[in-house]
Image (cartoon, rainbow, N blue to C red):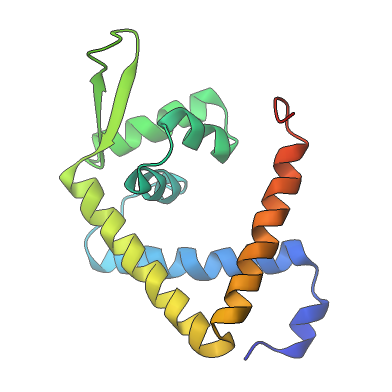
Length: 152
């Protein structure tokens, strides 16, 4: 059960530390599996591509990094064998980026680590509290998006 004094900690600090719990578990599992060369934001890119619901441009936009930093990140993931970059046959001006077999394996390890943390969390607080937390976090995301350009 979480410490009661944690309830007094500002929400941004709690979010940062909670994110670290997932990130540390994923990084440890990936290192154990031989995938210890994924750059910082690479976990997010690989995980998001594994879900298959968003184009790379949206994933990069959500990272809120410069185009140069995004390009360097994708280059590193391609060079390290996690992503494959090809010219889009339907539009030769565009590139498509997909997970390689190595990238898919890393994504599977990430998912398993996330699920292990989710299960431990459920054992600590129960499914209903997790559902409420998801609702609160989704609302917080919506608040942030409502202030972004083009969100009207």
